[in-house]
Length: 140
Image (cartoon, rainbow, N blue to C red; front, side, top):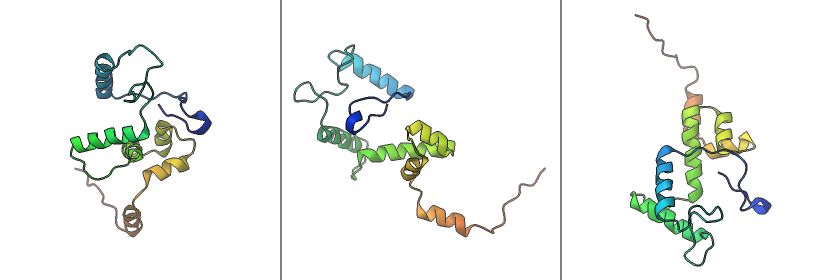
């Protein structure tokens, strides 16, 4: 699900987002074993240590950094870079900008293009490869 900003903050936009089966198993386990009241629709998935509110941005950052370190990533990784990585992986599979845009919930393909952030070296290789003979498969 995608959350809004400004006047849409703390609201869930009305779109469907599938959950990977492995993530679903982990969430089910978390709901059963770590949430005080998993059936309460007002309960936060991850509660703040201070009171009954949601996690603060700094708490989420510390959790994310700890998870990165636990899997051997020690350089600084921004939380939003995970969304960009997700966009690049989707586009690598679909090779379709419109499908990638729909999955990410972007209103404009221009937003999706900024997420894909094509490397200049890749673009240079395409241009420099123009005019090269295309390999032809020989039939048996």
